[in-house]
Length: 290
Ligand SMILES: Cc1ncc(COP(=O)(O)O)c(C=O)c1O
Image (tube, rainbow, N blue to C red; front, side):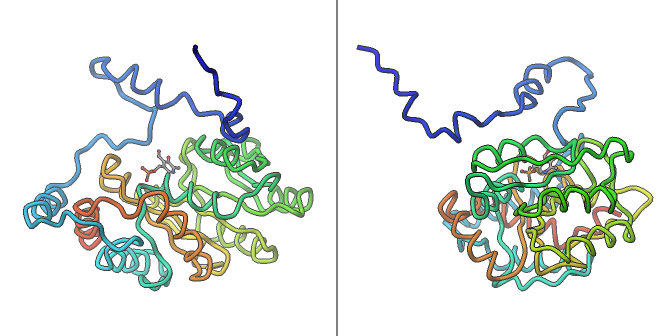
């Protein structure tokens, strides 16, 4: 007899909508000479020195689990990168975790904070994974449409959204933005930070495209409001390492240690050779980007 057990599935999972973008991208990938504007995927290869670091790690039998938060050397390299480039201070021992891409960091963070009915503010249009993860955790997406303001969140629009949703628990920012490519100047992001500082919102800031800025230096919101920011970054975009799955989340120690529980249960630790490659990439980041 054929059983249909679909009604056993959690409503949150049934309700979750996935973006069609991954399937669509795969379907059209074989078209010759296609310029793909589907996934955020650099069209160059992972740098040779990074690949060599991974090969050496495999040859040296670095093939065991690492600390669940990531190898301390990789965490230090990540903390140094954030300090040197963005003037934000994170203790690699207590405030920073290496994840399977920002996607995992995002999952872990939403699973840590978002319960049934929690409101999450998202300036839109935004990366569709945010919407799905809000669904998966039973949260409620509150869109702040940025289209009338040339796709940047203005202080006025933010204030209005906060006034209309005083119980919102989180805001998810992403700049430079996928899909719009827009980003904030230092003074623009400082104005947003000053408004958020007056709230208890958890500020999730996905800054994975920080190294892909042109003509304007990236400024992290964590410089202004470190106590309420969970900062994401990673190597997928800066080093064309989307397939290596290296992400970083950093924040206040008392929040990071809770998010890290979810990380540990999701993945134990990120692939060891990929972490060694990430250390190499992060330690020589500026030279490479130049
Ligand atoms: C805004 C944004 N955040 C996160 C990701 C996923 O990054 P990762 O490869 O580190 O999981 C993407 C990928 O396209 C993205 O565009």
